[in-house]
Image (tube, rainbow, N blue to C red):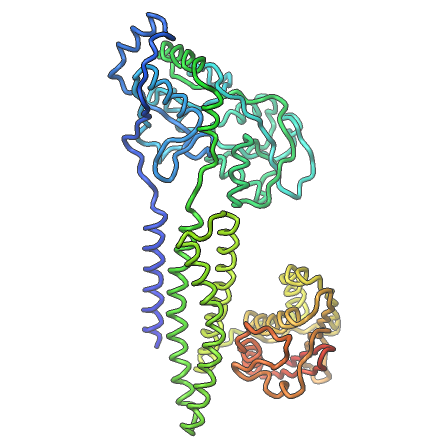
Amino acid sequence: MKKVRIFILMIILIIIIISIIVFCQPKKYEEVYIEGNENIRRDIFTAEQLKWIDANKDTVFKVGLAKDYVPIEYLDEDGHLKGLGTEVLRKVHEFTGLKFKLYENIQNETWDDMLNNIYTKKVDILPTVSFTKKRAENIIFSKPYIETTLVILGHKDNSKVANNLKILRDETFVAAKGYWTVDNLLMENSNSKITLVKNAKEAIKYIDEKKADYTICEIPVYTYYTEQNIYRNIKIIGEIKNKNPIMVGVRKGLEPLCDIINETIENINQDELYEKALVIPKTNYKEKKLTIIVIVLISLLSIVVYYLYNTFIQLLKAKKDVEKANKEITKFMTNISHDLRTPITVILGYTQAIIDGHVKQQKDKDKYIERIYKRTKYLNELIEDFFLVARLEDNKITLLKEEVDINKLINNMVLDMELNFKKKNINVFINLDSNINQPKEVDRLKMYRAIENLINNAIKYSKQNGTIKIGTNLLDNGQVKIFIEDNGIGIQKEDIPYLFERYYKGKNKGVNKESFGLGLYITKEIINKHNGQIWVKSELNKGSIFYIKI
């Protein structure tokens, strides 16, 4: 049995690894040229500039860029150069015939590496760069071809408004290494606490995870990550008064090329440039993620089939009467068929709709993917229950007992489940007996699971704005009694004797139909293995109280 389980898990792992390799393998960007329809404009250049152009018509100038500064400058998923500076160089190529080629090691290097490359002449041009005094020592700057609005980003818990760099002096600041904001911030605030990361995406992630207070970026960059819905905990908390001029940077020694770029900037249609370049790119990231989810889901369903089969065998062995066993299996199959049909049908339906292209709007795709995720999560929880039930029935559960403070365990549990209570605005009252000062010998994780099941049920069957009471009592014999009381829908009297049986679901109309009837069975088995007791008192439409004695 153990060998079969390991074999199945290995197959699933191989499938997942292959999926990641196939769908997430990075592109290679060697030999990428900036091309366009040549339309030599000899009317806009001086005789000296035309002479230089003719002399360098066979030269290939290497271009470095921030490959992930979306949407201002980046390489898309197909390896195409995108962004403002790229469009400027494309126009230079069209007007002059000069050749520009992407630096061959671009996929392995950061923006800070690109700056070092132009200083050491490995790279000739940076098409999208901002001026700083430090950079001007090694770079010749063209005229600005756009000015961007800079915003200060903070996390949502930070209500402090900022509108300049000086106000950030005492705050933690994060920026991409080599970005112009770092040079200027250090110049104005030498004592600033700056964390340097490799790109703008990581800087925004730091804010989202509250590892830093602020970062600065252009409005289009913020808009891109907001629309991607990757980071939900960021917001604009201020705007830099001065705009950020963006230019083309050329290494020292190529001054004539910078003059030619300036003439090109003077003669291009700025509106056309912005309209073509500043486009939020589309990404198939979520479609790839969906594909991987579906593959993993199929693998998980294979495990379900295996454990269902194993369960059937156990049922057959456990029953003395073959006819009774057949009836049990038929009933079990009916329950499984009913409970698996709905989530699987939903997953297949939404997946097919996306694959067939019936879902056009990104917000609708996001909604469908979220629903697929919820159903997948439900099936995953079901599989975990199958694992635990199989081990309980095979008597392969080993209790790792340790001394546990029951009151502290329950306190921590309530804190862990705080969000679950808030979703239904449930009032929680905790009444822990202070006389319980001796720890109990229990398996901490399994006891946590047993009590958690009862609290989750109390939440599930409580009404909005309901009340749940959780407490402990020290009994005369030294045992501890734990109780979880709710004022929810209650349990029908005829259901109570069967409530802790495997696969049993109550007949109340308010009972969650997605329940598989394993939670209370698992709880009872865990309590039994601790030589404890569990029972329930309930009144329909008034609520229930579950008791544990250990």
